[in-house]
Image (cartoon, rainbow, N blue to C red; front, side, top):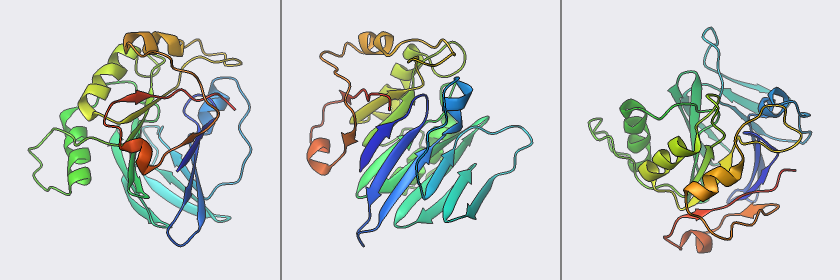
Length: 224
């Protein structure tokens, strides 16, 4: 699994399936435009949209070989399992592929409530006990940290991390040039987490060897 960041909540997740197919997933490309930047240009097979209006219907559409998902539901595309969970006005997405679990929190601006946690835990553990609200650990967490009542603040993000106990933490939705939305800088979150020697990298390659380290790792990606 390869991850590249294009600013705000926009990632490109590249996956090679067991039948050697190369699949590309793009998350929330419109957030780059909202922040005053240019919409990234690339080919993709799947688009995940996390932000919905009150009158928007849950939908998945397929056109020009692109599968666009907006809203909650369960999907299986090219050996990639996707679960969208509603936490209005945001849909958070859980992905399972290559024996790697990834939770994408999109434009989340408030802490997950017990109902969201129950749904995630049920999906992760395949446990139908809806009274259980504690989530199982996940491998990769893509989490907003920029605050300003637009997305989660650094303090809220830390609470979410303590709930999910991910192995790899990738912050997103914070200020970088040329954004016009003045969100907090990534350094605020990094300092709050007492992380040391966090050097931004161009692309993250996630594999089982990396996940064998049980300690939490914060990884900052350079903006493309």
